[in-house]
Every structure is written in C-alpha cells, then in structure tokens.
Length: 86
Ligand SMILES: N[C@@H](CCC(=O)N[C@@H](CS)C(=O)NCC(=O)O)C(=O)O
Image (cartoon, rainbow, N blue to C red; front, top):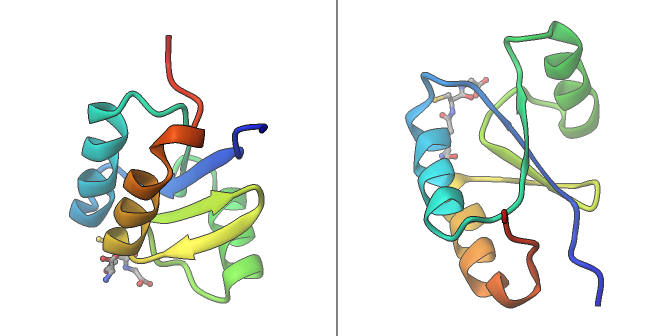
C-alpha cells in the first residue's frame, strides 16, 4: 500500500503545531512542512480549502485535518502505513 502524502501547515510559534511536530519527530514520520507565514500564498491556500487559517492542519493525500490532538491520534494510529525519514 502506498504511504499517504502528508503536508503540515504550521508556524513556528504555534504551541499546538509544536505538539504535532514533536510526535512527527519522535516517530521520524516523513512530512512536508508548509509555514503559513513564509509565503502568504500558503495561508491563502489553507483558507481557500478549509475556510479558516487555523494551524496545525495536516493534509492527508489532500484532505485537511484540523485539531492537534486529532492529528496526533491519527498519526499514531497509522504509523504502520506512514513513510519514515531515513
Ligand atoms: N484546538 C486547536 C487550536 C489551534 C490554534 O488555536 N491555533 C492557533 C495558532 S497557535 C491559530 O491558528 N489561530 C488562528 C486562527 O484560528 O485563525 C488545536 O489543538 O489544534
């Protein structure tokens, strides 16, 4: 089975984002990080797709998931299918 493509919309000073990022690092999960303040197009895309600019937002094969605890629970429940950093 192909691992889902994961993209995390975040910004550095967001504690909820850091909570998710800690879990990603702990399990060495392969994720593309998208800083919403690095390029305002990123924030616009987040708002266009989800209707809000709240982060963290994890896109799983293009489908957005909000709420840090929901994201963490999903990651930890799906570790067996996720791509890992080498
Ligand atoms: N309950 C949410 C809280 C997320 C949250 O409040 N994120 C803040 C940044 S630390 C945010 O994006 N605020 C801007 C907004 O919601 O428009 C979670 O646990 O993910």
